[in-house]
Image (cartoon, rainbow, N blue to C red; front, side, top):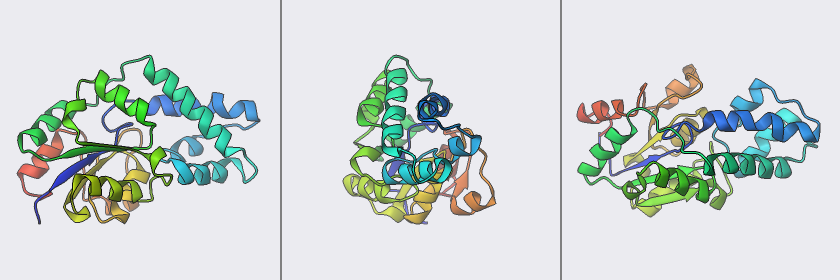
Length: 221
C-alpha cells in the first residue's frame, strides 16, 4: 500500500463531542414549523450539509418543508451553544495529532459546520496549529456523502485521494470517503456501522489513537 501523504479530519463527533448538540437541536428548531422530529431524522442528517442536508430534511419532513429556514435555524442553535462552551475532545485525539505532526504529515479539517465554529473548537482545544487547511461544507455547497469537500481539501493539501487518509465518525462521512476513493477510517461516535458502512471503510477503530497502531502496522500506508 502506498504511503499516506496527508490526513483529513472531520470535526463533529470525530474530534469533538459535539454530535449531541446537533442531535438536541432538531426538535426545538423544527417544532415551531409544525414538524415532529424522529430518531430517523436525527440519524439521517448526521454529517450532512448544503444540498445534501436539504435533501435529507425533505426526506423526513416532506417536500413542502421550509428546509432552508430550518437549516439556518439549526446552524444558529448549534453555533450559539458551541461558541459559549468548550467542547470535550474525543479520546486519543491529542496523541494522534502529535504522532502525525512528528511525521510531518499535513493535516486538514473538512467539516459541515460553519468556519467560525470550526475555528472556535480548534482554538479552544489548543490544536489549531496542527492544521494546514480548514474547509467548511458551507463553502462547498454539497455536503457528505458527496465527496467534493474531500476532493477540494486534498487539492489544498497537495495530496492524491488514494494516498489521503480520511477520518470520520458518521455514515455519510464514511460514504463520502469511499465514494472519493480515499483511505477511510471510521471512529464511530453515536452509531455503530452496519455491514454496508463497514464494507466502505478501510478500517473501523474505537478510538483515534488506534489509528496510530494501523499506521505503524502498515495497514494504511
